[in-house]
Image (cartoon, rainbow, N blue to C red; front, side, top):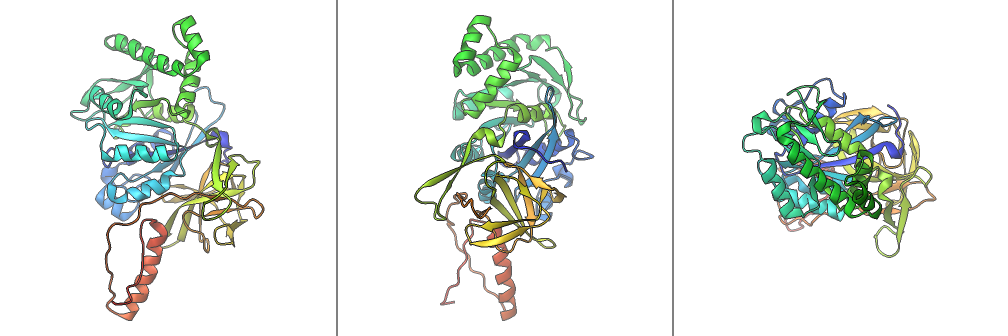
Length: 451
């Protein structure tokens, strides 16, 4: 697989309440980008990121699934690699979402267009705020009965403020939803239902022209509001050219001043190429977010230590997820914070003061590992069979010690007892619990001497 420089990488957390269609949206994005031969569907268990037997049977995400899309937006010199972190939406598994989202550089919050803001919508917003991430919304299921753009937008603006601004308007309602008006380029994007996800560009329908004009002016005003140079241009010309509008929107999203709203029907693959273009053109690269904060000591107290997200810095990687696989053993998910990770590199685990050899580094497409020769600063990868390293630990060059802060997971609030029937069962249970503890940061395990 091609090696991507930091500038051409996007790390996006796909978050939201359960049943808002996050996994289906990821499946549509991958299909539109040509990463999968057909459109996987949650209903038949063929999506890329829900591959566990329990997930397929229950039709919900239990673990965070990792996938990537390679996409070239119009006017881009080359393709961009978009790492997609498909997170669970049910509160039972929300700690998995929080611990994984730390690896993202921006959050795409998926909202049911019929239900609007729900409990987990607000919770994942808080996680993104804690991690200081730019955010955007996708109103999904726009094709469903009772789906309402106006009602859902009002719900978002009431909860999250006036910075929530649509960059698209729907063409058609409920089952007649067939495309969007792009309020940046002021064009209509029409899609064939269940098609390849690539839009046919047309003029804005006459019945939407006035509404689109008003919404475009609102968007331009919001973008120009925080930039003196753009505001002067807006006063002089009465509008902003498309490229200046995109540049201004990119800055406003990075500054967390504007939270754009996009539209889709993930099941019928409507609106997906516009979302891919948005992720590439508006969401930040890892380097655009500045420096990564760490500490000089493993207790994360005392002096902080900043590390620039760049290839020129000493190599450091942060482990954000551990998966126990029956065949491959322990699979370690990590983010390269700084430097360039080469295959077969030997790194120090700063937390344990041990050395690890990273053989056969890969990037994941669901459960399928694609081998890579190197990973640049900001990229996400996996490696199997590390000896000691687990979630929340930092590895890197021996002369560049730094400790990145792990996700803060709430303490457990309920206790269960596990009692083996035989001594042999006790050994088996001990091994299984040890693997579960590596995967789930929220779990605690102890022995009661009385029982």
